[in-house]
Amino acid sequence: MAGKLKSMSQVKQLLLLHKNGASIKRIARCTGMSKNTVRSYLRKLNFLKAHIDELLLLDDPLLEKQFSDGNPAYKDGRFEQIKVLLPDYVVQLDKFKLTKKVLWEEYRQAYPDGYGYTQFCHHLNQYLKTRKPTMVLTHHPAEKLFVDFAGRKLSYVNPQTGEVIPCNVFVACLPFSDHSFVMAVHSQSVEDFIYALVNCLEYLGGSTQMLVTDNLKSAVIKADRYEPDLNRALEDCCNHYGISLTPTRTFSPQDKAMVENQVKLIYARIFAPLRNRTFFSLSDLNKAIMQYNRRHNQTRMQQRPYCREENFLANEKPLLKPLPATRFELKYYAKYTVAKNNHILLTKDKHYYSVPYRYIGQKVEVIYTHDMVRIYPPDGGVIVHLRDRRAGKYSTIKEHLCSHHQHYLDRSPQYYMDKAQAVSTPLYELIKLLFAGGRCPEQNYRTCDGLFSLQRKTSSKIFDQACQQALSCQCYSYRFVRKLIDQYQKNNLQAEEPKDLPQHSNIRGKDYYQQLSIDF
Image (tube, rainbow, N blue to C red):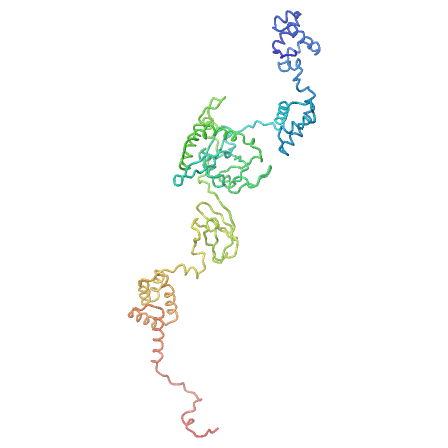
């Protein structure tokens, strides 16, 4: 029995023949064993002191353990020595970044008769494998979506500059059907990550219950084993599609082993076919990726009579939650103080947006998307602007300004002509000819303001006469009209007849002033 163990079917034949009283020679001839091998099994049978009928009822692995002494390597005294040392060796490998060669040399110094380097590494590797056994996870249809970025990159060439632009590759996988989605984006930023995720959900035609991500910055701000701080933008996206976000544990890629395996597959089935092709835009690159990804999903799986796409369409797609009517827009959050000109500066675009002037000096919350800017003042309500990316420009709603500033914004040639027509026909004609004079309209606004000031302070008769005179002289300036008004007012004072003094007792008369001496 020192050699290789015989099959248990042969051993059971040996036991049956021995039970029936066959000799060793006959047993050896019937079973094809040597007589010494038969004798060794019979000696072992006597040592076991078990009934032959009980042994015959045992399954082959259990019967083998009855007749086997086990692996002699694990009964060696050297194994008992190294078994105690293995936990400390693993700690030193992780903590001090030692190599197995260094550990083995220290081991042989302490135990000169110990294992050689090959056997040392074998036992150390066996211990490492048994420390963290993996678990077979059961996945349900439409329950989870695993996402990750591939370690390698694809690229395209800018046709204008010839620059090679590298692209990150987003990979998503449904663990139940192993159906995959692959897309190239410029970076792993939040914007590109959410853009790829939204395209993935639209490609699948629905959303899952959970999204399982790695601890990349696009998904997790601060990693933690139990309660990571999640990126608010990704949370908004998941809330929009009704998905719960579940990052993996830190340094635990086995939590999303399906997508990790998908990454290895796309290296062979997408990266390899595209390695010798040149693309001149990101859209062209993604068209080629989609073509090979579809071929990958339609390839028959090993050890299964169907492909990934067939399993997805039959068992998973009908259970996906329907997508909302509107596509998700990435939201950005900020807080700003309203400036004295009742505008806030959106620092991302360097553009100004108006807020009602009563909020000057107060802090407001701002949520902006690709197309809209929403401002939330402290007392409730919302102020909505279309997003404008022109740096240094202003987006102003007139109603947000005070009355003086609203008047300033309302100024225009038509505004002044309409206002003049309502109060005086000569003034209307005067202002109409003023704007027709060829000067820039803004240069005439102050002149118009001055004319309206004169109109408010002067009687309508004199003001209309002055305007008529200015029209006849073809001189439309504020100063000329003011001089005409002053002249008319002065002439009117001189033309007025003197009036008699009222009768009263305090009149001295001419006799009083003709007397030579004063008579008191």
